[in-house]
Each structure stands twice: as C-alpha cells, then as structure tokens.
Image 1: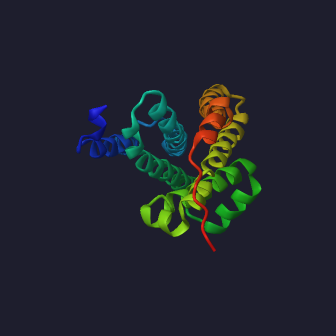
Image 2 (image 1 turned 135 degrees about the vertical axis):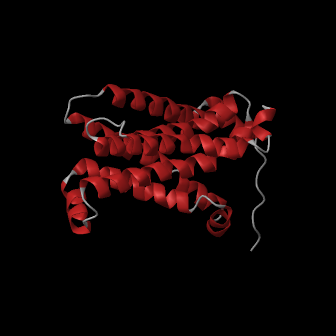
Image 3 (image 1 turned 60 degrees about the vertical axis):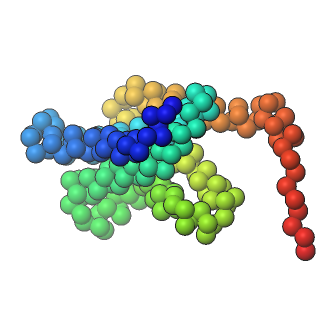
Length: 214
C-alpha cells in the first residue's frame, strides 16, 4: 500500500499509539475511571501492553500474507510503544499500590509469582527496546541481534502467564483465552513458516554463503 510509505504515515501511527495514554490521562483528571481509578490505570496500562505485543507480532504475518512490505517500517516504533505501556503499567503499580516504597516493591515482587513473571517480562522487553536501534544492531551483529530479539516470544509467554495468574484470583479467564488464542495463532504461523516443507525448499535453494578464508 502506497499510504504506508507516505511521509505522514509514521507521525500518524505515533499519534495513534499515544491515544490510549491520552485517554487514560484525561479520564484520571476528569474522574471518569470508575470507583477505583488507580486499579483502572494499572490494569488498562497492562492491557495495552498485551495489545501492542499482539500488534508487534502480527506485523510480519500481515506483511507477508497481505503483501505489504512497508509495514516493517512501523515494527520498531510499535515495539518501543509495547515497552512504554509496560513501563507505565509498572509505574502505576509502584506509585498507586506501593507508594514508591522500593523495599516493599522488591518484597512484593519476590513474594507474589504473578508480579514476578510480569516484572521478568518487562526486564526482557526493556532489553529489546534498548537494542532496537541501528547502533545496537551494528554493535551486536545481525545474527546475535536476531537471536536476542527472539526473546519476544519469552516476553509473550511471561505476559500471558502474568495475566492468567492475575485473573485466576477472580476466576475470570475470558480475556486470557482471547489473548492466548491470538498469540498462539501468531506463534504457530511462525513455526509453520520455519518448519514447513516450503521453508525447507527455500533454504535448500538459497545460494550458499561464501566461507571466510583464514
């Protein structure tokens, strides 16, 4: 699609990615977030982290299936916004639930498994966001950079487990099942692309890389 290559496309996507934050900020000031606005902000930021994770993982399938290679232009931005909403999720928890009491936060993370796995997922996501730029790719080398960024699948698993354990207290797994289905389809598509007979044929027909001479 030519629209994806338009100079205004990236600023527009950037603005759209900020809309959830703008909506939540307005809701906090307008007092429209319900009886427990702090809990609403924490959970909404977590929900948007999961949504952006699904969007990021959907870029490659959409790009290949729909024939829209220009979608790749937005993957880095979407990945950074996924980290951003995860950081907002943690910030809201640290502020509204724990009052920025660092020892209490550390003890709570160690004590409650669902917070621990969520924190580990955000640590991995922070590492991916910090190495998402061209200088990091050059410093690490393409192969090591790609291997590192496959950790996004671990992030997806940890995020889903975090959400599952959080909802287990209320025995409410409807949304968990929806996210699990979406992430399952996206990951299954990648496995199929990697291990299908067509993929083996493509690898076999690819030109051999010249070996470095000692």
